[in-house]
Image (cartoon, rainbow over all chains, first blue to last red; front, side, top):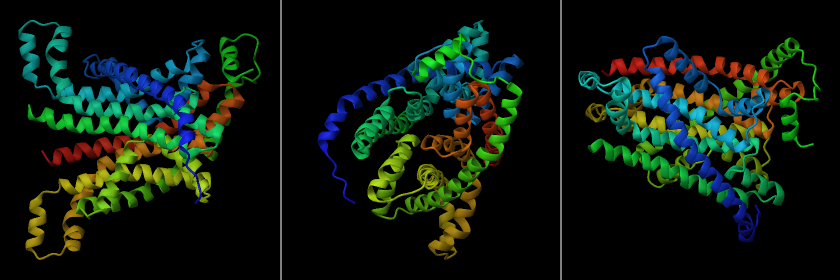
Length: 219
Length: 239
């Protein structure tokens, strides 16, 4: 039980940690935005009356939910070059997280869309709105207000999942920690600050989401 | 030559063709290896890890439900810690830090420990949530029958909470099975690891990972369906 924890090593680690933090935050932010956008598309496809579209969206969601993210990342990272598509790991990371979280976000958004009362659709129809107008001005704004808390929860999952992109060499928080650990052989100095940062980001999202949940319910 | 440029060269299709390319043979080998080498380990890990996580989660959830002072705060910190950390970080931490404190576990034991700690925290939240969902009147009527705390929990509260907890538990077990793929990182030869090793030797990443995904799909999809079905049943019951 004699591990002399050294703050000097932590100070040495700091520049690498900050690079990792920047990349994790970037991946998280871009990922959350693109996953939500993609989620809207998935949700609209799922509630579509055109059967082939809704069925393929349902199949897509089932596939994403029933296979591990790590396999999906490997599939993209090693599979895309087979088609001659060469992307930097950072882009593959964002892409993988978007495709993965987009399916989950799509389910949340779909639940939101379906929870909007039928009369809202009818009212929009009676105003002679087109499908696009109906969705953008009437249905989606109301749906988003309802599903905002679970979406924030999904965002926390996305940040958590983003640790997995380190396996393909994206320099995120996890990768900077494992690299530093491998060089210095000092796991505590490398992992504790990293875990602290993850805890901070993710718990803020989780508790932020339950706080929002309580707030939005009062409306 | 570094790996990435090797992948690039191979992907662009010029010059390098180091592998046999016999797709049928590769497919057969993959199926055989996944089935005989990877799948048993993944199933064993999933079952063992989930059972221990259920035990841990039940105890933690119950203690937090009963509001046992001090322990409850410690457990809250544990649950928050696990919910706020990526599973990969938990795994790395245990794998690299435990040996420094003279705790030498095999990769398998480390994996089960990490899975138990991680999934256990989520299950404890499910257990606590389901216990809290039982209406207060049930507690009061049990009390009015002069049942003591243990009897109240054993005969009145927990049986009702169990049926409530089945759908989220099934959902959690899907997440658990998927999380077992992450332990391939610490060189434990389960499904994903087998796939990765095969990919490096057969040069067919698409095929290798497509079949790998198929194995996980077959494993997870029925449980996912079960979870959705149970949810619907409970929703109908409480309507």
